Image (cartoon, rainbow, N blue to C red; front, top):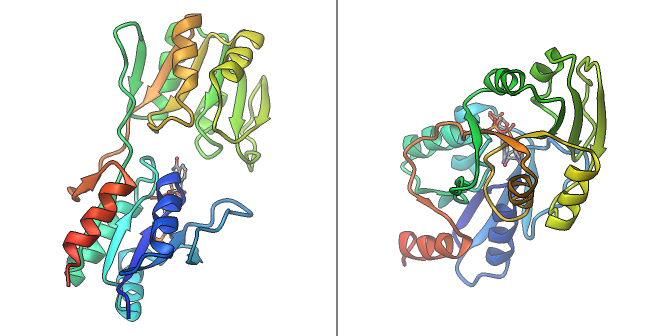
Length: 250
Ligand SMILES: NC(=O)c1ccc[n+]([C@@H]2O[C@H](COP(=O)([O-])OP(=O)(O)OC[C@H]3O[C@@H](n4cnc5c(N)ncnc54)[C@H](OP(=O)(O)O)[C@@H]3O)[C@@H](O)[C@H]2O)c1
């Protein structure tokens, strides 16, 4: 039987790795999604949806399946799953790899305000005197921004906030990336946005807003990535395939 690889997914990299392993001659993928969105796209090959029940639940699942290796492709801002995977794999002596796209870096012409917490982003917006702000940070972390009752917010998310925090002035824009520079220019200029708030997700699907912000003089408040365990890490799916071939050599 081909060794089974658990892919912790929900990201572009997770889908791409599942597709690459689905008809792989040596490995069989099983993808895991957290189940946050109501009708998620299913990865190629077998998949399962929902939490495992912490590191212990994940370890029990891995033992029961006889999994050969785990590849953590979760989003850079999924702050818990990587730690759970590190604990479970260390306990079982299982190989674990992290696939993480590189963070965006400011260029010489960028003036980003980088923060570690959303409360700091709220403080930065107040200090900047921002009046019309694009929140491009998903729908989970909106509540702290509702304190700014003199700011008009454009909230862009894939699904509606549930519940909607008590914003004084806000509009919701339901949209899923990728977003082109042309679309971002039309949005930022058309809505007279003076600051945008986002997280340093990295990747090319949602980076157009940064170039357009630079071009239009829109301030960027950027949340840095959360800390991660010291897991071997690669940036691409191709490197992950190489790692699997080397690590699970016959
Ligand atoms: N946070 C973001 O900005 C973001 C953006 C795009 C996609 N995503 C994807 O959405 C998922 C959830 O994000 P999050 O920020 O809530 O993660 P998180 O804080 O790291 O995880 C919270 C809990 O959700 C469960 N979980 C997370 N990822 C899972 C997976 N792939 N399969 C099964 N259970 C999973 C785990 O529950 P148990 O402890 O019960 O196992 C985990 O303890 C991740 O898979 C991530 O790749 C997140």
